[in-house]
Amino acid sequence: MITMDTSFDVKHCKQTAISQVDFNNIAFGKVFSDHVFVMDYVDGEWEKGSIEPFGPMSMSPASMVLHYGQAIFEGMKAYRQQDGSVSLFRPGANISRFNLSAKRMCMPEVPADIFMQALVELVGLDSDWVPSSSDASLYIRPFMFATDSHVGVRASHTYRFMIFTCPVGAYYSKPVRVKVETEYTRAALGGTGAAKAAGNYAGSLYPTKLAAEEGYDQLLWTDSQTHSYIEECGTMNAAFVVDGKLLLPATSDTILDGVTRKSALQIAEDLGIDVEVRSVSVAELEEAAKNGTFQEAFGLGTAATVSIMCTVGFEGWNYDLPSFESWSVAPKLRSTLEDIRRGVTEDPYGWNIPV
Ligand code: COI
Image (cartoon, rainbow, N blue to C red; front, side, top):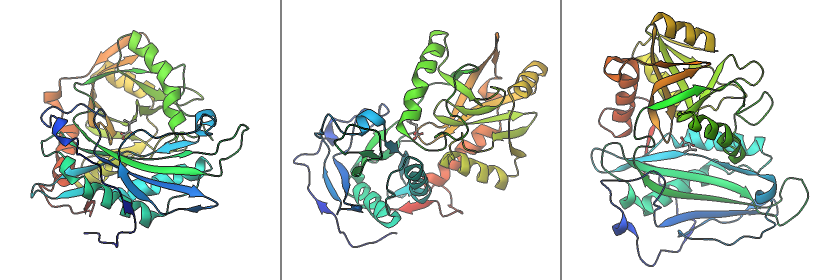
């Protein structure tokens, strides 16, 4: 249990909106908990943060984020434990990654202790919003953006850091059809692919729309230079099982170091699953699809957790994966991870941080 002296001002909402939420049927990202954490960076330092009612905020039309895109975010979750308490899942990993993103986007880092305290206090205050049903959790969205009112390209001098939370159900309601993307690129060497920068997501929308017109839900991004190696799947890390072996594309400059991926890898190793972390080529997957050894394909992400692919679109043809009932690796990783996150089994890694 983390206990720190409260140093944030707290302004409570006048009336909770929780009664408007159908906790048995929660759409992803549509309803928001009562409070939000706010902290501004001014004159080279962070001001004292505060917790305020969730609601619209005003900003200058010349705010630099709106023009030059200095904006980063994180996605993390809090889970209702089997004993009724609430835990954050690996918040330290998200805080570290947030600060790596901040550095890459020329933004100030948020001190880890203040970040953690803000998470604990905000989630603690709105803990009634953490769902108890299986498949549901409290999604936590920390983010930071440039607030200087200025025209001209340079790093902003002022920033706002915020955290809001929202109860969520499953991100994908069904297995996803994905297409191997061989024209557009999510991230290039030396670029911002390893940062959780808002612009990375904006750049992915047009190619994803084109794929949707062809009947796919998401893209399997490939490397920018040759389009021969798999990088990510939509907004998730990608994972494959070929001939009984779990293949995870190695993280790099162009692949986000996903917390769910990291956790699944640790679990796979500890369960004795044969796993290789390396470059995974489109050609080897296509070959495995043709010779019947391509057994499982799934995405790993905070929002989508372990998300099943049903079809992979290669150039000129689609491969339908075997039915989920025959899979062994993804279900094992998913259930082990879920059981740890929800306090159903012991957490041997110290990943759950009670609120
Ligand atoms: C997450 O998995 O948390 C993400 O950041 C994906 C998101 C864009 C919904």
